Image (tube, rainbow, N blue to C red; front, side, top):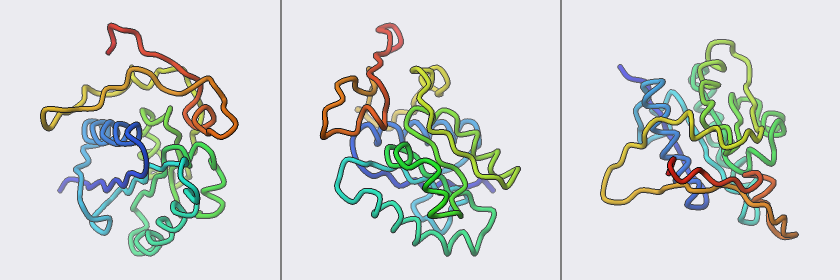
Length: 180
């Protein structure tokens, strides 16, 4: 029987895009199939957003609801990605030690961390900002309909006082025209 993935996405269109790419990646490399219920999952992935007020509270509240699932199924992997993960990093593990994997938006292509967490029983945290390499490591997107998100650039280099984007998604980097 195929292993199941439950993914919950908070926030912007970039997170929707990232989540769809994670589904493609985990489907191709780990043969995970998406399920609509967290209770049925072998891997739970929370893709977070930090733009809204109280975003961290929302993340920890959701993780608290999943704690019991992890206690019932210790083999389940709980992963937290996205902008809150990028901001909070290891703090997520300190506050929710049952979380197995923490990764930022620029490292979603390194989700073999899920296998490493499962095999070693050790937490995996990667919130680094590698250059746009993630696009080189993602499978071709699976398109289910007439529309799809296309990422032509990521990040921002403006560092406005009110904005977290440069700190959570990194500096602005454009993909080469031929890659798009």
